[in-house]
Length: 314
Image (tube, rainbow, N blue to C red):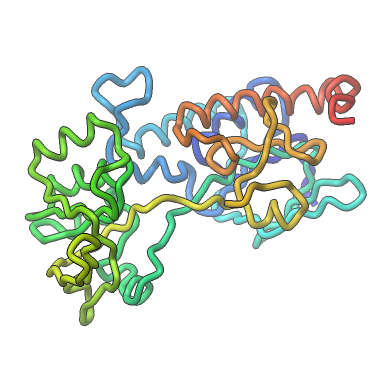
């Protein structure tokens, strides 16, 4: 079994930033990622509110820059290493993946979140056949076609704007009569003539070999309507990747987000958490990075100054 001073679970912005700070401070650092480094930020078409990039930056570019910086300071990043279980018996911290087992003196959980689904008929059947959760990943396949974006937050608004450069027609359906997205995005959506479908809920996605239409319930009119579309982009929020943590005994809130204190400490000594997997109410890249810096700094102290830092948990 490989032994590391610090094991970070997740290679999104929080995990990579924690890895960069920890490795730079001298900790032997391993980062385990279920998929590819970058997390959900790599699926963002354009990030306009990250400091230092006045013209904005593509999510993939930002993820690559953080990854490169993390590796430069010596952190080891391993992809396709999805964590299945934490074993915390006897004070040891064993991280089990689909491929191996690792022991860490201290852990940082930065496993992020995943896209929430609609749970309607046709969603699973047409996933990859017209149903998508990532405009950047799949937008090209809908060039010159008609698409529907479902959601009302920043991610849905950014995706609708991105798809507006490719698709022939873009609808944006939201279950309320106004978006939760920032006003800057709303103004641009109107300027780009994205078609709003207010007070609509998706009831079914229909098609043959691929998506052909979507059935929406008009809450104001009290009836269903069927709209012909070639693609449905579902962007209705996220759920935390915290199942393994909860099973191991870490405290979570009613939605599954890991509870931490001001120093990113969980209820179990030697385990910290940062980023979208935590109960922090503001889910932004900037807040994730701030949490990661704190977690990495505290993790360094836990390993290198154990008397003081471990005493705090008593």
